Image (cartoon, rainbow, N blue to C red; front, side, top):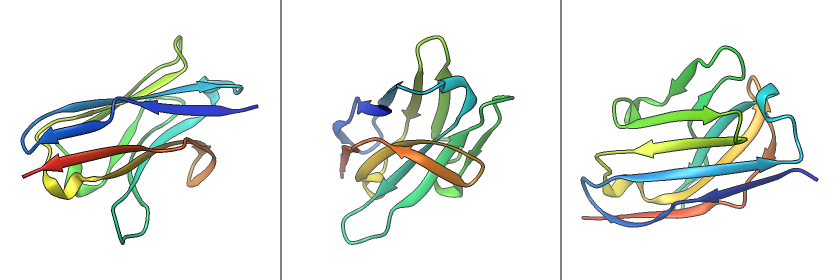
Length: 117
């Protein structure tokens, strides 16, 4: 049974930082691209960033470039999202997902990130 479990969310003031973690089990983690998505209240879920399985290339949406960094530790089956210079518009439920290319097959339950102004 595949499980993706996010942690590290919470409430932070604008300009602050948070580090999300996503621990994976039940799959060969190193074979999968890992992505982070988010869904703000009243909005559709959107892609935020991804890190490929091999090599470790990364992709970000423009609004988070230079502020967010995705990384992975295959030995720990964990993907991270370091979020700096947070803005109120980053407030959302954040989800990690495992897949290949543009297809994601497994999803975490989501974790709340709230940025106060």
